[in-house]
Length: 166
Image (tube, rainbow, N blue to C red; front, side, top):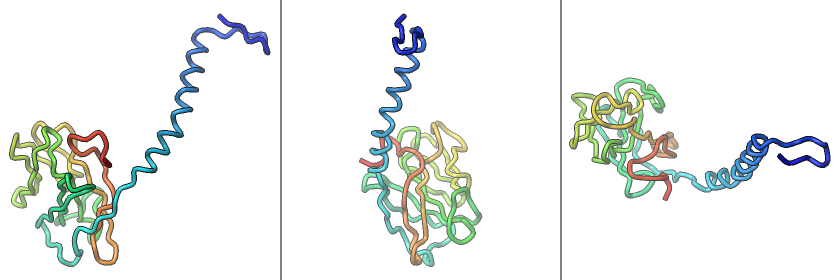
């Protein structure tokens, strides 16, 4: 044990480790925060709002050309949905199980993976309904600007990535 000469108190090993850990964590936070602010998502026009039809998927890529995604106008409101009736949603189309491309099946109202049949419900935030998928499909954040639907960010990690912004 070391003595605190200024106050005449002894510092235990436990106190030393706790103080060292807190100091290390505090010193790393500004760098982590700075790197996150540099990782901004692009704004990408996807489609004209007026042209979207219920249950007709619109394919696009986001946040880059190597990340396939789909925009859907559902027939009901959905969590995170925007636009008329909060029915516009978008998701990465890379299955969370093995990265195979999922496709929207309007007759089943599901995004289904042809590789292992994992099925995801776009009306429930891309939640997996059945299959081997490990988590919901990453949700593309949307907005409507000047009559156009735009992608503005991502919630969740695109399959096969350590970060969504390369």
